[in-house]
Length: 217
Image (cartoon, rainbow, N blue to C red; front, side, top):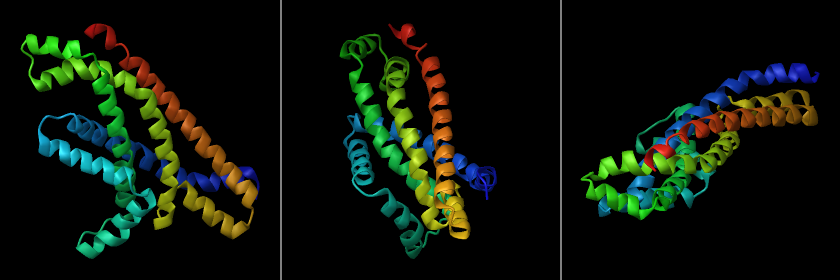
């Protein structure tokens, strides 16, 4: 089996990897904003819940989180199919790391601007949306890009719960042909190309978002 044949076979798992990465990254970004903002809240129950979420999912293994969602949760009466379990584990994990990025970026916005918005009569939501986020979001993007690429690489663990992603097909193909070097070299190349594409797409988004910043100066 030559490299082209291997590549063609691995394409069957490529779509699953892309879908899993995009969906879990999008949900993770949403969680990052919700809990990142929550950690800066003056409402103590919101702050406590946000801190608990971040510490639990940053402080435990992603593989254990995946196994808990897929194998342990059904014992409590909630069954998830492999795709939902894999997406949830990846999203919850990246969301916990991303929330610290959001919190740090929000705290980096000059305090004088927040005080000026209060003087103008802005409420908390208006201040967040119109003053803080337009300045903070572009500064988050480089770190969010790194987290998204890490999420792409972490998506390989879903093969452990028999989800047919790129790594799952690579392992099966290796077991059938024993062409270990050739198969995993092609697999590495495919992950590398996906990471480049993801980095480029988020780079374009970052350049677009930086257009906001002059509007709030």
